[in-house]
Length: 197
Image (tube, rainbow, N blue to C red; front, side, top):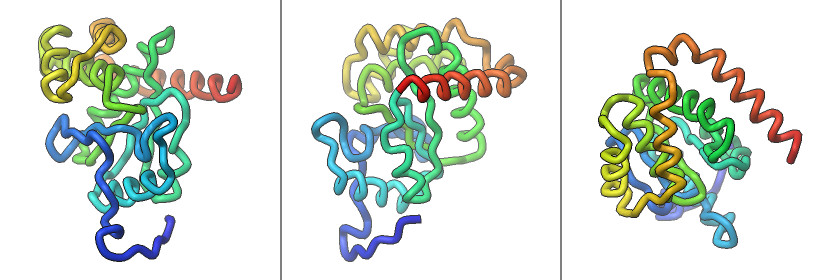
């Protein structure tokens, strides 16, 4: 665990940008700690990781396709799960595993922080799909509307396609039996992707 000599308000860190609670005190979303693209700043990332740790987030779930920040979470003793969400052939598998993970971790009363580069289409579509998959909301259009209100932004075609994928997944009950198989499949896909990079 990284030890830092910080005093005063800096010892508290700073809240990640666009942090929004989806399930109060259980599941929040935010922008990638430190920012994304050319706006990414190491100092800001450190301050935001301090805040995440001090605010008792048990685990960070990164849905960015690349492995940005993963080693930084280890340095700060923050558990991390990488579930790269992107349109394409592996989306069903990734969402199946991610949604099952979320159910298990929330049931265990873990405080979770999910992020992509920004709080946009991918985050909105992924969570709208999660609401439909769990049966919390009946249809994808209703879930999209709910997430647009929650995130205070419009969800475009990419997010809508991700959310629609949820209707083709095994149900939460069916996933209990498939969990180990899907997780192994996802890990194989991720290993393949790292070899290609």
